[in-house]
Image 1 (cartoon, rainbow, N blue to C red):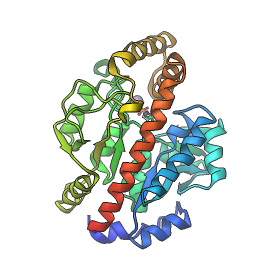
Image 2: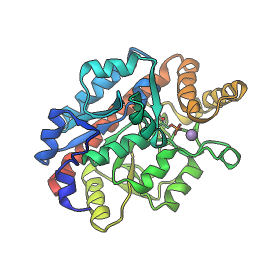
Image 3: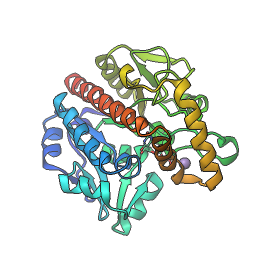
Length: 314
Ligand code: PSU
Ligand code: MN
């Protein structure tokens, strides 16, 4: 990757860059991409739209421009208006779209809320290198027979974007997820801790092979990776703040319950992650939603710092 591609957004005909995002990219100022599946399919209304607005504000407070990404009427939107955020939070015609879905949603002029995978692709098209989310997808439990492995992992292998997440939920198979990332050459780096985090919990039972102490070090890793010609993404795992975490011993039985309920309903494929997130909110009486919101805000703050430092290095 060369410096020009970092500084100048690709003028793709299907891409609508918000003027503020375009200005920032043209001037080499930090921009943080944000996904929209978490809004449309990851949280209930009205917490979803409040979270979306709040996270954009956190990015600004930490010195970067937020660029929430979605597909609306078949157009790739990078940076949304308040009305567009509201539509994503409320409209039942918004599909959950991953990389495989993108061409269909574009061709048919539909609305789509982008997952980590498709958000990475659109961010890269726009020239955005840092992206904040809640949790990434991974290898699902039972994948040895279902073969349900999130496209997020494949996208991390091929697209030059750093994804800041709170690790991988233990509704997934964390060990196998880390193995797939390693095989594909994706650095999964924990920020400020020795253990890879498990979304709701700081602890997963898996040691992190790689770690950095600060967002500045993370930015240096991005610079080193891409200047070495090592294409593909970086997963920066940012443990949920202590005061917001649900300790592993408390959340594990709730997750097991949600997985049993899902099996009883026979859900598979793209419906599983939204169902499990919603069911865990019900089972915990809303506590997991508070944790989810807190960790997304924390990831947005870290992503803004990484983006600011990365812009300085370039
Ligand atoms: N993890 C969360 N909240 C979410 C998601 C993951 O805590 O909303 C979403 C992200 O958009 C992620 C997607 O990319 O779920 C993964 O879906 P799947 O498992 O179907 O690949
Ligand atoms: Mn899947």
